[in-house]
Length: 344
Image 1 (cartoon, rainbow, N blue to C red):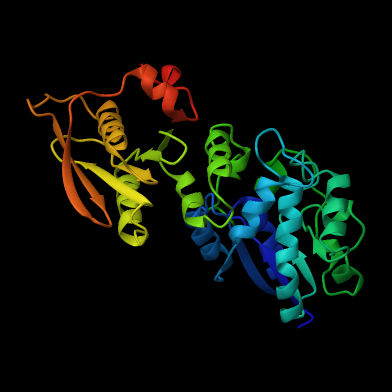
Image 2 (cartoon, rainbow, N blue to C red):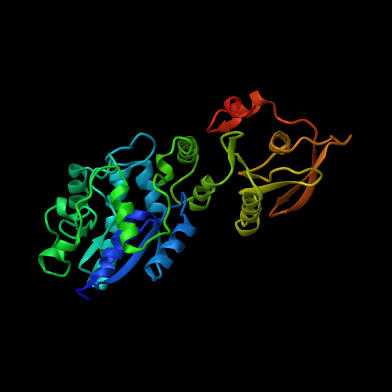
């Protein structure tokens, strides 16, 4: 289908604009979102679907992507963002679909110079070359700053209707959005979790303790406060009611291995659910109960301590917690932001 293009969409403004520009040229657009283990803004994708009037296909990046993050050929950015390797991986994943649809191009919302690691001219050339897609990647927002792609040379895409945006500012994109009547989009400045300093310690801990095929444990990095109890056990505490429900659900949905997950749920106080990842012991019970008390609202302590319901694939039981973790203990166990700086 000569007039079909594949649009890689993130849910942000730039990929929304690129997709809409292709639609306005009368092309058959097949939108795709590659889902990372570390966060997919589903609401942003749903909003994009409303704006373009099309369903977006979701394709999991999968365990191969974890291997890319673990050992990037072209290195990391400021944090643990292997941006060049990630773009090459994403484009390579699209090659079979490109052939299946007989599509004319892969379309992205990339803007020359917007991201210093992966959107400078030299890196863009490298990404296109290493992915085997020279001349097949169309960047409508910056197309006039690059040589024409195959789709432009063949007259499938009209180059005169493309743009020459560059740099980190978003003013031209926002003006174009207003011109096209696109008023609902994610605010600029968001993006990949791998670029955020607060996420890096959790990711480093995951890569040190888990293999690439532990995709379920990988997705847990998206939730809660993380504490490393020992080499075998990590504890995650929910930060709100939604995360509490998610952590409890992990036990019920992925509890085929009794040593994998155990949930600790406060019964006699208002506080976070804790999820232990790994084989538990009396020490893990004690630390889980004390961590729950540390992050619970201050409440009167019953003589026997606060009741904590423990849920595992082997059954349920109740333990009692009497003493919260101190700030120093929490700081020594926490993976990520330093507890002493976060607490009042």
